[in-house]
Image 1 (cartoon, rainbow, N blue to C red):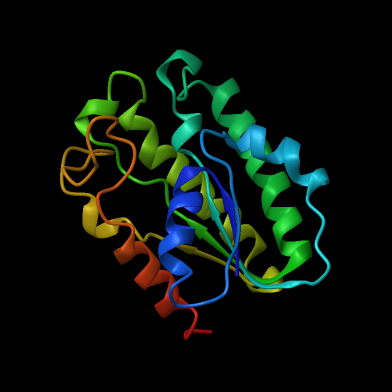
Image 2: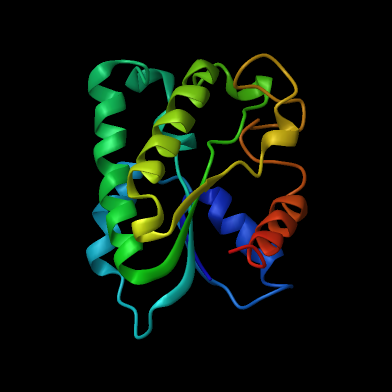
Length: 179
């Protein structure tokens, strides 16, 4: 399994490695644009069975006006580039929803953008559909227990990272048995 994207990929990889072999391509702090810019540097000797993408958290910074057309369309263009690359290098691609934020993160990141960016990722994955074996999933659904885009399950002090990545890893491991 190849994990791609931001720090959520990076962190869940540690938990997931207890169940299966993982190549962790997560880059903490990276945006979709930043990750897309790194793709040409990634070289694989073998095709991945499954690739999992985690992006969006670092794309919804308030200073970037994440709900503006320009920022949102830039995110989508970068996500398309990443998805196309992953589809070319893996038999199956799983695309994770953008995780909800803790209230501590709301001053820097826009919780209202969580659902918007999640919907964009879902749509981009559905456009690739069965032809590229792209599947959207929300390993954070059980954490969406606050106002839209928010959770009480984020780990202070940043409100971005979760208290429990083991449950996300367990859900991913379970998805490996579903075709």
